[in-house]
Image 1 (spheres, rainbow, N blue to C red):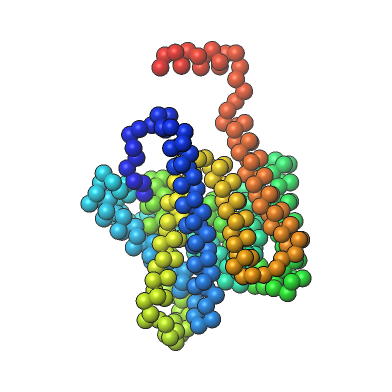
Image 2 (image 1 turned 90 degrees about the vertical axis):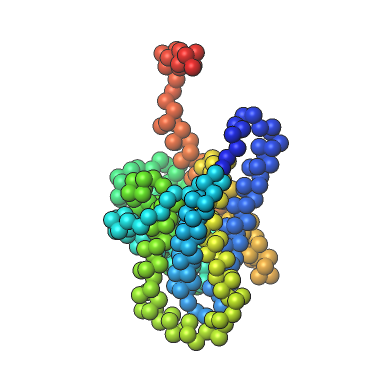
Length: 347
């Protein structure tokens, strides 16, 4: 989804205007992302309703509904809202299904991890996605990883184990939450691999993929809700007819859908590397806010574990960025420099 862009190019914009736009987009990404985590935590930690699968299912339903709304608005206001035309195709839905299974695992275990470990430990709890990226790249794609990238993964792994140790020392460790976090991290890595495989099926359109993914998930979640016994919990929930409850549920779904848009928007206005740096800084701010909100006291080693995870993640992103530049931009020889000069003069 995109709103109609101004015809004025970025090079013609004053620096202050350009910087203001970037600051606004980054601030929007931070607000949506942090709000989504805290809102999900609020819904999941409810003692009256123990239904994490249903909450995740409802967010998928909201995402499908928003896709339909945006599809309608794009036809109603084509000059303002740009969204792909949605027409259900069973073949596409079937081919997206393997990704949907991984997607269900990712969002379900993410929420379960958040439910059991809380917001403060959430960053560390699901920090192993980078490590799984490296392992799966070698196991599935036979791609080797540089020494410096592996070193960064070692820092992340060390931070993870130190964090688990410090949570145990503080008496607040949930091994269930840690296991869910590890599985969620694995699913995040698998999701990235399957997304690349499935993208050609939806003509490379991320919004079509989101539509089919969430639609498939909405159907597959129904038997999971029944099997998990959450249907009984829902029927016994005394606030099931309260508007406030459904308002928060819908808001959670809106934030879940919006995070995809603001992520793309931040990458568009900055770069993939800057987006990852922003995400790392956001995780740091999110952890600090969670500790302040819970009015808890954490040890120096606990904070060290968080910093190890964040620094390791940032360093890995930076190292991979440098490696990609080396591959994409070959060293310029006198011959290539001459050819480039001729091409420039011909334009």
